[in-house]
Length: 194
Image (tube, rainbow, N blue to C red; front, side):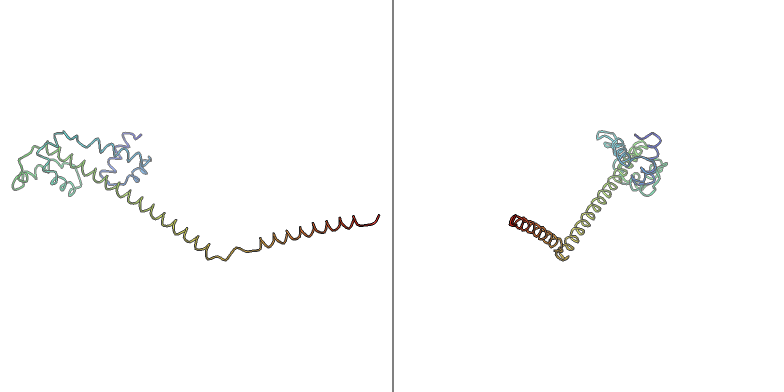
């Protein structure tokens, strides 16, 4: 379980410094799966419900503009007030849409930040999955090559030496000779006159 301090550090490292889950886990001294689980839960918790005012709001039309501005600036400090001023100064004002309040724009900014974070999170997961697939394929290829080399060596090597078979045949013949000699000795003994 992550402490409040670790969660705060995790948010900073992931959303502001764009570090990977593995790097965050290493810095915090926790398991990477804990970081991934917390990020999944946090992004779901931060995603507004379908019936929320931000989704019904006319301010949602400004979402592409807000995302573009967030990508340009990189910083979120004072973003809502600055965007509100910029939208007022546009010609036509508010990009040709009906004016919106600064509070509505703040909701749109929050929605944009959440959507961008979720998209970044999904892209990272896709990259991780692609990396794992590539590693698995490379391992399978390496294993197939190793097996092919072993088979090729087995086929190219000469027939196994016949010495062990020869040795066992030689040993069998020696035993047979001994048995025959004993048999002959017994016969001779039985043929001797008393």
